[in-house]
Image 1 (cartoon, rainbow, N blue to C red):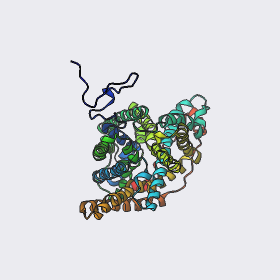
Image 2: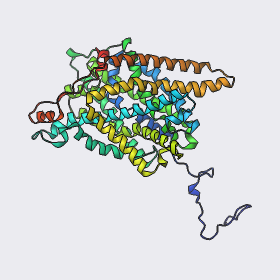
Image 3: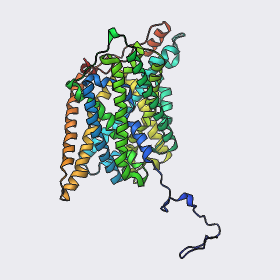
Image 4: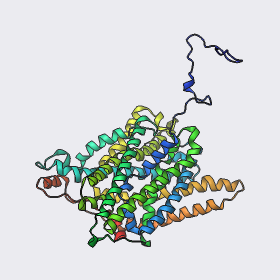
Length: 481
């Protein structure tokens, strides 16, 4: 039986387009665009866990394995509450950038937060590119140069930047997190991380079970002097503040309130579990012989197929990490431009030449500057950014958001939240501790020579001379001594 039009219904005029049922949700609203909760958890997990995969086994050496577990548990709980505060503030203001999220903060704090976020994330992009360059120079160039030492790619660090820039430009081109290319990149990144974690755990287990009883690895149970350094290192991973405004803005509107609560819980829980598994498995295998980049120890002492998978997997992870650290930078710069011209703020609404230009600028600068200034000099610059801008974004900014966006409005309404006040006090205490540790690391920075030029390394490879190995940052060497 055919349905008859009810009261208020009308028949479509000839030629009039009629919306199908499939284009509407059950509530009769148009289908929403944006991230689902599962996709948001995946992106948050990927954003916070990249370079940490290759360094986390060094953290128990700094503070002992009991100290590491203590810091991981306390920092993980704190990171969940920080992310929830940042996402809630972003959802409330429909923010896509730091500038929009920090509207309720004092002007000075807002400016510091915006520029700290842009500088720190851009520096992280340069760190990722530098890691890829070092991987190519140490792992691929000896093979490419084995014939006569004249392979063009391995004659200069700037030459290394050319193919890296081309790949990075394509992967970083999406202007939103929920596009097809962006979600595909994140899915591949997640799959690579799963393979990398399983391989690292298997490698650690094999090294541990095959260890010579006469040379049993020594392990440190407790070292309080290293706690501040590990707090700072894990805060950058777990707090993951840089992506929060963009992540909240790209969620489906109907999911934003729920996701601001559950996305941090799931993402941080997965990140902390992964860090715990990797750290204990590989520190258990290597003990205090572990270095900052513990894959290097495996390459030197236990080279095999698993070690090659670890090193190659880390290079792939770094490439796929770049879109998540550079997209907030591009969005913020476009936010400044849109505010001046009165256009819409989301980067996806910008014209094609603007999106192309912003992507070109950030990917090209991240690819070239580490090679131009030198790897050691850029390492020092990255340590300085981490100790200043990184501490502000990861710890101080969430505390300020809690004060000005949650605590003070409740106070004005006549309420008083003692648990919230305790949380803010704890986060600010962490900020003070990490700032003191950052000053210590800055004082330890020393200008280091760049070493053998890349063309000379290529020539040495043709003569059978082994390449140099990566060294831990000088500012962290004193903590492990």
